[in-house]
Amino acid sequence: MLQRLNAGLALQGRPKTDAIRAIVGRTWESRTKYLAGAICIALCVIMLAPLVLSVMASLKTTVEAAAIPPTYFPHELSLDSYQKLWGYQDGLPTYLLNSAGTAMLAIVFSLALTIPAGYALARFPVPGKEYLFIFLLLALIVPYQALITPIFFMFAELRLTNTLVGLAIIHTAVHIPFSVYIMRNSFEAVPKELEEAAVIDGCNSWQALVRVYLPAIRPAMVTVALFAFITSWNEFLAALVIMNRGATFTLPLVLAAARQETSIGGTDWGLLQAGVTVSVIPCVLFYLLLQKYYVSGFLSGVVK
Amino acid sequence: MYKGRSRALGLLYLAPALLFVAAFTAYPLIQMIWMSFHNWSLIEAKKWIGLANFVKAWNDRQFWISLGFTLRYTLYITPILMILGYLVALLVAPNTPLRRFTRGIVFVPVVIGLSVSSLLWYWLFNYHFGLVNRGLMDLGVIARPIVWFGEDADRALWAVIVSIVWKVLGFGMLLFVAAIHAIPQEITEATMVDGASYWQRVRRITLPLTARTVLLVTLFSIIGSLLAFDQFFLMTAGQPFNQTASSMFWVYLNSFPYLKLGYGAALSLILAAIVLACTVVQIMLTRRTHV
Image (cartoon, each protein chain N blue to C red):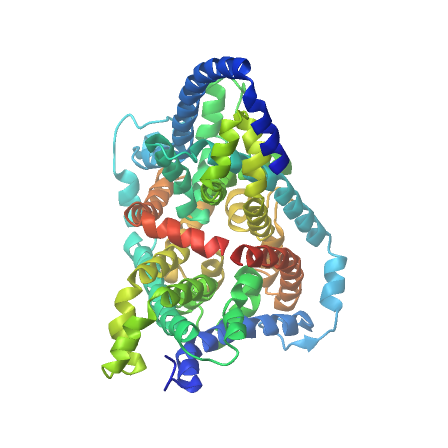
């Protein structure tokens, strides 16, 4: 690379070519600028099209949703599909509650486990700390998909199958390396002086955690909660394995069931896309609202 | 600072997380190894059979079909994701409003569920009701609808690849953009001064300086593809004749519908070992990034 730089520097003493290059460069540059802009817009359209078409399909009337060939946009707006989804099998509220309940439990478990763990890893002289930290990252080394068979057997014995708590436990386990990592780093980033002052004022370690650290690590808590939610809300395999009674299904499961039903005969594509839309909305909403946490958590969690 | 802080207290704070990982990750791992040496089902009593499950896998035609299919999927999708992701990253790396916006949009499919996106694309690729066939026909690319799923394994594979590229393109893009932004400004400026063309700069400067991130994302893509399940379960359902059943799909079928837990555990163990090899490389790479 250095060689390259030097070669480049040597080229500088050639004003004629430089001038020509500058002129050619400028027209070329403005042209590529527009081209790049056009590609950006095209890319946005391509990325958004499937989601937009899905929302549109969910707003078609039952007849139009089953039309051959299909229409791109509904000729007539209708909430038929949502109405059907609302009453589908055990009803949409059941599935929404199952999904949201599992996600809430996963958030609570994640925070309850990893806040103290991050505190201990960052601020206590725990023997063998590095090894314990690596042990907490075990789920990174052994993917949960591979563990699903023994977990199923274990949960069957513990009677945790068909329970939201059981599913939330798996989702927490999937997610714990990321959460521990984020928590440890954010505890380490809190200035020690803050805690020292509190300790001089007579705080014990628990009080220091609650009064000094918790306010300071709020961004990390948001990040962990956000990712716990997204992981849990979207997870499919564990739910498929652990939940086998219709009333305990999460949203992705009931949609998968609806897909299987539709593939046999009486197709209801409108209902399926209404379900897709309902599942996508919270993810996109949280993404738009918490983009800052999303991107920073994503980058620090994945790269480091 | 640590005065008056006992080791025991620290361990106490750490204990819940340690116990949780021990119970729900470490124990299942040991259990899986134990199970793989047994004929193990929920109904009959378990029986020690040594390596018989692994011998069975060796002779299991579907095991090889699934592994081959999964490797093929991995081999096809990884370069597409890397090249496309990197090109998009180069496009949107400058901090103009339009490019920032594009970055945000390309990342949207990453935040939605894989199962949900598979159901969305399952509809788009449907023979009668899907808009892919409609769109291709309107553009004059095809004369009559194509059967994407259930007829030909390769066609189904490509349809799945399209959907997954859409779904995870933003993942690599975001990491690549971050890596490109981390290149020191002086280096970029120096090369601009000597009049190196854009693609020369990309080849000589940008690519070498982001090579580690490229490798890292490649490994993420490989690991994710080796464990692929949702997209095949929901889009192809393994059709035709389990030819599009990925390795994880075959684990699932043995463990759950068939309840051959011992065999399922053995298959999981083999898959975990393959993934572990990739993870070791990945950890070695991230360690170096960390320092």
